[in-house]
Image 1 (cartoon, one colour):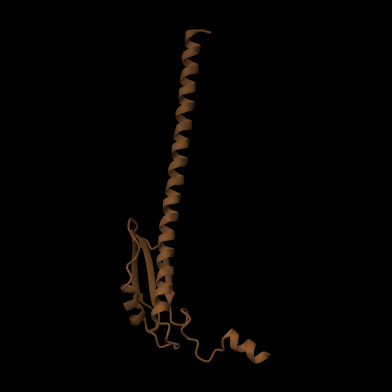
Image 2 (spheres, rainbow, N blue to C red):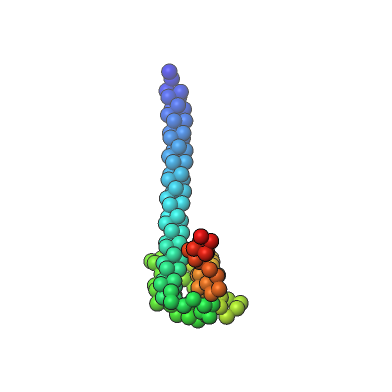
Length: 139
């Protein structure tokens, strides 16, 4: 084998190894970004579930649809969002609607949006028989 052939083979090998390392680095970076995004979405989901549980716990004794957006907003503002999550509370089109928007601290666009009402929280149970009472009437 001549010296020129060795140099050509070494340069081809070096270029192939460099390209392979670049592809590996891009795949690792993409995987890391995907995992970070998943963690951020889990924080938003955790905040949503925590808010729902807080509202249900605080409004448990009320079995009517008279809960307004201002009452929901006051209860929500007492519960801080998780780290790196920004929660925005806006009144809805109707007086009983509250619109929630979640953003990640490093992004400007909302990642999740939800419309909350008293009926959606299960507070409008007036006149609707529960499953247990319907089963007892049938026997």
